[in-house]
Image 1 (spheres, chains in turn green, purple):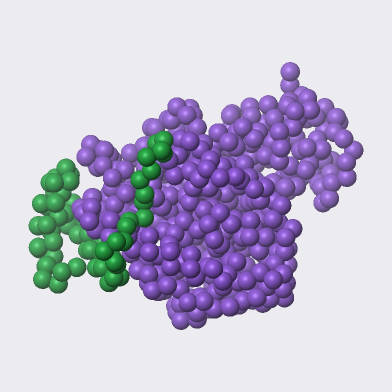
Image 2: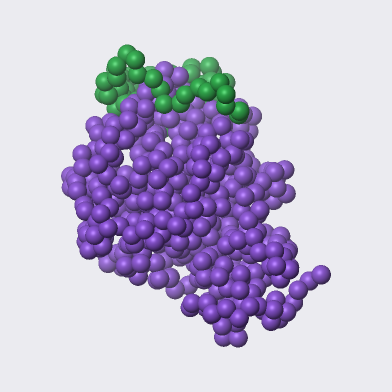
Amino acid sequence: MPETLTDADLKNLIKQLSKIAGLNLSDDRVDRDLVAYKSHLAAIDKIRTIDLPLEAEPAPTFGPTRQA
Amino acid sequence: MDVSRREFIAGSLVVPVAQAIAPAERKPDELGYLSLTDAATLIKARRLSPVELTQALLDRIDRLDRRVGAFITVTREEALRSAREAEREIAAGRYRGPLHGIPFGVKDTHYTRGTRTTANTPVLVDFVPDFDATVVARLKRAGAVLVGKTNLPEFSFGSAGGGGAFPDAHNPWNLSRTPGGSSSGSAAALAAGLLTVATGGDTSGSIRNPATFCGVVGMKPTYGRVSRHGIVVISWSLDHVGPMSRTVADNATLLNAIAGHDPADDSSADRPVPDYTRALRRGVRGLRIGIPKSPQFDGYHPDVMRAFQESLAVFRKLGATVAEIDLPPTSDVIDDVQQIVRIAEAASYHEPFLTTKADRYATTTTVRRDLESGSLITAVQYLRAQKVRARFVNDLAAAFRTLDVFLTPGMPAPAGEAMDVKQPFRRMFNVCGFPALVLPNGFSTAPAGLPIGLQIAAKPFDEETIYAAAQAFESATEWHTRHPSL
């Protein structure tokens, strides 16, 4: 998680992102969600410590013959 | 035409059955802990009626489930109707196989046609599916008898706690403690002798965690081995469905019935299903067992480590070799990978609920909070997690080249005890999709009397080797024979 972001910054970020996500979170919901969002950002930071080659592909694969 | 119990039994073949309970001496409570294997032998020989077995379990549920809380819905009428149908078929010589007439339960995430499927959330409390999940349909086709839908935390999120639309389940070994989660009701029902077999779901360890805490056997099969069609989703790429039971043999028999390709599930593996029960006699002589290096166990409960070391001694005595292995560096971040993949996929599944009925999530859980925050993860962040996941799968496959099975404790501590550990060895098997089973391997001394479990993992689609190892261990120990006092 970027160290320069304070809780107030993150709450503002959650508020704005929630609009893009179609959730339009209230201030009360933003307060509740902050701890979980910080946990997700911390996990993302840890994942970034793994160096990946440019050709690395994500795990799910598309299959044109699959019948969903 | 109905067949009376007396007629069903009187028409039985005179076949000696090992350890069979003679009908005249049978006490209803003894049927609560009858294994699938023994029950199937008795039913096939017409020395036990499916109706008698089902009624005995329903009676136990009536008497005990107010305290255990293992069930959200008991399908009493359907169960007795199915049991009578099984009885008629068997009496007419149309025995379908070892699941015929056997009572089972499914986690209340499994769609059941005409019976509510709540996932223990107010969001779905009135949801009645119009079809059966593939797993449920296969068990019914095998002649098994659905007794009820078992408890879970709201939407299968986390371990038991916080309720949802219905109160939490409790651990039959100590009703003040958690049974684990999220397949809490299935594990608790088995431990309490309320079901013969059950199924569960496993996205973060949700079969193996409660199976360990309740002292039963739980298998998370290889991803794609068992259909996910008709199961309420947490995360499409991490969700697994698997069998839960009191013995290894019962578990293998149940997997036989539910495994196999399903065109309705995009992730279902189109490959043959072996008869898993054949692996039970294989033994472990020459089996190559890998275990983590000791620093990976920092923070593990002393009783758990004692049981783990004693289990390794059992395997050595049976002829297996044990060697420490290095886990790949990607394993250090694999729980973080699982967190991001799980919550991003879950947020996508829940988008219609979050945008139209968010106020219906339980206020006593953190499910809504976790999902709303998960909705803010970007596609780039999600895909980075999936890239590290792909690398981890390759790394772990390489580590498994010199092994047949990989052993760890089922959980770092007994139910309800503090667990602050670096590596819990659960979510990694959801991330890689390799099969992993837990079975009882001891009881705690401090606090006293709580089950401890052993996890056995193997290469993809090698559930047979897991069953061979688990059966050898179970046959050499007696942990699975203990039951809680209720």
